[in-house]
Every structure is written in C-alpha cells, then in structure tokens.
Image (cartoon, rainbow, N blue to C red; front, side, top):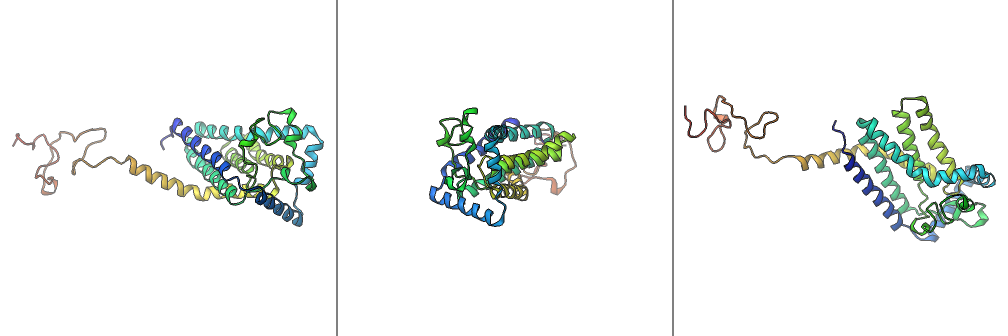
Length: 292
C-alpha cells in the first residue's frame, strides 16, 4: 500500500479541523434553546439516577489537587494527544493510518451535526440553583484560560459554549484509546489506551463542562465512525482513480512496464492486431517505408 504523503495529510487534517471549528461557531444556536436542552438532559439523568456530574463537580471544586489538573487536562489534552496519536500511526502503523484517520474525521463531522441539531448549555452555565461550579473559572488564576471557556483569556467569545452534545472530548479520547490498545505493543501503551478515555470522561463531568449523556453521545458518535468510514474510503478511492486515470491515446497499442512509448518490437500481425488505420501496433519490421 502506498504511504500517504505527509504534506497532503497535514493539509487535509487542517481543512477538516478548520471546517469543524468554523462550523461549530456558525451553528451556535440561541441561548434559550440551549438552556432548555441542558435542563432536559439534567432532569432525565436525575430521574434515572445517573447524574454523576454533581458529586464529581463538588469533589473537583473542593479539592484543588484534583480540580486544577483536571482543568489543565480539559484545556489542553484534547488538542495534544489526538494529533500525537495521528502522527504515531502515520509513522509506525502506516498500513492502518488511512482508515483510522478517516474514522476520526467522519465522527468529528457527525459531532458537528449534533451541535447543529441540539445546541446544549453545559452544566457550568446553568443557573446557580442547579448546584454546579465552573471549575475553569474557579481556578482560572492557575492557568491560561479565562472565566468564559477553556480558550485563552480574552478569546472566550470565539468559542461556541453551547456545543456540549455530543462530547467530542470523550469521543476523541475514545478514538485515541482504541488506537493505543489495538496497535500498541507494550502493556503500558495498552494501559494508557484504557485509562485515557476513562479519565477524560471524569474530567469533562467534574469540571461541569459536560453531562454524562454528553459523554455517552460522544461514544455513540465515535462508534458510528467505523461503520461509515469504509464507504467514505471507497468513494475517495473511486474519485481518485478517475482523477489519476491516464487518457487512452494508444488506440489499442500496448507498452511494456516502464516504457513511455510502444516498444520497437517485431510481432506477428493478424487481422485483429491492426489498428483502425490498417497498421499494426508494433512497428519496426512492419512500419511504413520499411516493407519486408
């Protein structure tokens, strides 16, 4: 299998991520709908007894030794670990890279569809009566992020704070975990593959950035990726094959491997070997001006 070109891959990933980021901003949705969706999700979890965000958020808020590292993890690992795993696959597992990359991109775009259809207010932005503390704002003095979001100070307005459903923090972490578990060769790598998505799920809930059902939706979106990725790859191969197919200019003449023009070989001519001009395709002994 031909190894992908690094510059082409980098350009493709940059285009997809830029499209995702811009689309995330453009489909911000109105605040009233986002808050209503957030309350609905929280009430559903409470009725089912699965609102794990409350105890985790209280723990992270009351214990800075947990809350501060969790905030750093939420603000940075999402953007560091995923590219690192992509580069690792590209260099060490090139035979699996293209399918894995396509899986990640398809799931990311599905997440964008979720942001569009269901803008959701995260727990940290609900009314204080719901009992959540925004740990990013609470511990903002320890990091580079501001009180508005996980973005650097002053740039919170450039993020869509209602893109909580699904949680792509959890989705991307799950993808990284699967890659590390499947293609890692050491027990440590496989252990990291299990731990990273689990820790990420705890972090997004403990920092009050996502509900438990956001994390579940992130897993579902990532689970849909492998089902759609083969179809996307086949379509891409079909398009690329048509684009790379050379024009037929030989009119039935064939060349040997490595030849730019038909070789000058003498072959036995039959009625089926002649071209529409009445001349054979091979040429030396039977060319014009050189009759036998």
